Image (cartoon, rainbow, N blue to C red):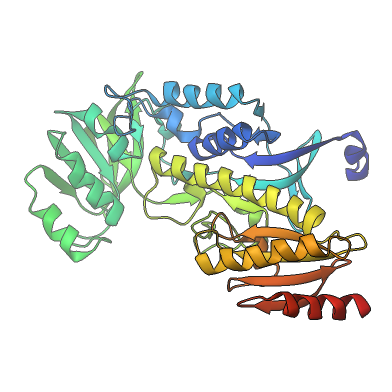
Length: 420
């Protein structure tokens, strides 16, 4: 079947927001968007809840005194999103078109046309590729987050794979719970990829043991991991090590292939955003582990999702306001007043404008833009300072006045623009 024939079979759905990814960040963004009465769709190709669902115990998420399983916590998130009429589609995204006011997200069967898109597709830990690895991932002995799973390893023997900053720092954190932490390092004795301070602390930690010049050859166990077979990279000797669990810290891969050449990202593929979760494309936001950020946890993903959802709501509202109230003028001139409602000077000028509109209702219409709430519209008008009034007619910015306003100044410019 040709691409054209497939496209003919696609159903077109127009929604307010499409969220790509159903992990903690995407679910939280969905809750915020749904609660704002935005028609919202979350597209998740694997499992709603993402990697968090594989964590047995999450004890550092606020509000759960006795902790919660990742599966239960993500189920609560999903149920809350559904309560706000958020729709879930379990499929993968085939293509995207994010430029322009209408964002297009295509799956195999549906072409979604949205006003805003939130990218929350997360990432995945880098695996070793060793034999038997797939049999013990996540809840069967191989883990990726010491902060999440350390407490479940109290008085146990744990192996850490890797010697970078994350591996060594997480390994030292594990020593607060485990009876022994065995670290497999690919380098010669004494050589690590972490910083020197962490290296010194780790080597002097009595609970940490190092096996040098090794990589994982095989993971073994019945229902749960109980042995890691290491291979000496110089001699080829196999070293079986009995363990209760194993943590992999050999890197993390963001699921950002779809956005290459479209959204700004760093060399490692993490998307770059500002503190409002805005990407380089208007109306496109990012949240969670796919972002370049300091800490990747459920709690931080939730924070990202809340901001992204709120920002998407503001963007859609401002876009509608911009098109219907600011740029559409009819036979009048719009006086778009950009101000800060907490500034007395701005309020004094607002009073002048309100009185002017009452005096010349047939010639002008006053539109208020308060930057205290959001500066999105001001940025679209290239206005940075307040108070400022823009004269707009037939979709064109004709004049911009900054500072204190008077009736005569407004009248002179209004008359000039009307006559022009």
